[in-house]
Length: 84
Image (tube, rainbow, N blue to C red; front, side, top):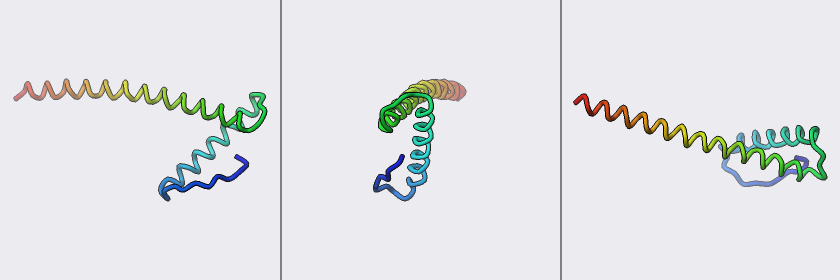
């Protein structure tokens, strides 16, 4: 955004934090072109809501895929045990 934020982070996380900041800025700029807003905080709130919604969707999908994988592995183990 337009102002710097001081944060203490691990050195190995810096590249991810910079990438995240760039993505947030990019998405906020896109929203600024599409929607009316009072100040930059409105755009940040929209970005946060959008990103958390996508995160929750991915989390649900991941749980579903993990369950499917677990079921398949259980079946494979059952088949391998029946060979003995």
